Image 1: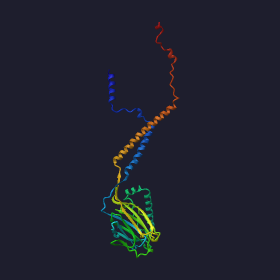
Image 2 (image 1 turned 60 degrees about the vertical axis):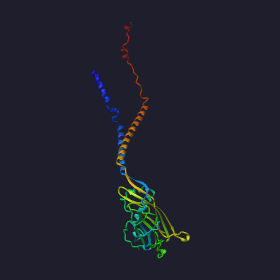
Image 3 (image 1 turned 90 degrees about the vertical axis):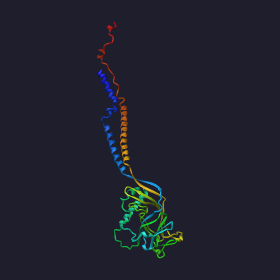
Image 4 (image 1 turned 120 degrees about the vertical axis):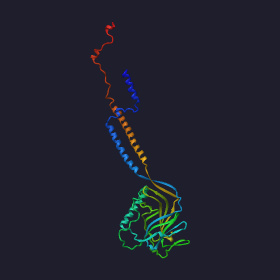
Length: 376
C-alpha cells in the first residue's frame, strides 16, 4: 500500500514539473557537435565584429524643399589667375536686375602664371580627385563627412622666389550679390558704370596683349567650407588665339550641410563649359574674356549626417546570434539525418535477423504438457 502511494506521489511531482527534461542524446558530447559549435561561435564573432564597424559608420541623408529665402545676399568666393597684367583686365558682376556689383571685395595680385614644382604637383592631385568625383559620385558623401579633416583646397604659396616678370594677375576674394541670375565676367579694361549698364575701357589695350589663359584655383558660392572640392576647382584653360571667349554656365543649388563636425549654409553647383574664338568675319561674335553665367535653383537641399541608433545595433546583434544558432542547429540535424540514411543504406545487406536455435538438451528436457499417465 505504501509502495503504491509512493508511485502516485512521484508521478504527481513529474506532472507538476514545468520544465521538460532534455533527452540524454542532447547533452552527449560528440565530435560533430563540437565542430558545429566552434564554427557557430567563430561566425558569430566575425559578424559581430563587422556589425560594430557598421554601427560606427554614418551616412548622408538628402532632403529637398523649396528655398523660401530670396531676400538674403549670395556670396561668391573667387580665386582665379589670368595670364594678363592686372592693369589690363577688370572683373565685375551684372545680374538680371541690371545691378552691377563692382569688384571692391576682390584683390588684384601680380603673379607668375606658371606654377612651381610643388604647386604643379598639388594641381595634378586636385585634377585626379576631380576625375574620380565625376566617375564615382558617392565620393562626395565622403567629402561631406570629412570636411574638417581635409587639407585646404586653396593653391599653396610658391616655395621659390620668382625670377621672371609678374605678367599674370591673380584675382581673389569674395563678392555679395542678389539671389538672382547673373553674370560674373573678367574681360579687357576696367569696368565703368553708366545709366544703361556698364562698359569696360578696352580701347587703351592692344589686341596683341590679349591672353585669357586662366586657372581657376577656387570658385564656390555661399559659406566657404574647407575641404569641400567644387566642380571648377583646378580648371586650367590655355588660349589658342588672342581673341577667345570662355563661357561657364553654372546652376547653383542652395545647400544646408549638417554633420557631426560642422553646420554650414553653403551652395553646390553644376557647370557646363564652352569656348570659342571671336572672329567677326566668320560670324563668331562676342567679347574676349571669361564669362561665368550663374542661375539660382528654386530647390534647397538639406544634407544631414545620420548614425545608427544603439538599440538598433543591439537588435541586429541579437538577430545575428539567434540566426546563427538556429541555422547551425538545422544544418547539423540535416547532415546527421543524411548520414544516418546513407549509412543504413550501405549496411542494409550486412545485418540479418539472427536465427533462434534450440539445443537438443532443451528439447530432450522439455516436459510435455500432458504425460502418458495423465492421458490414461
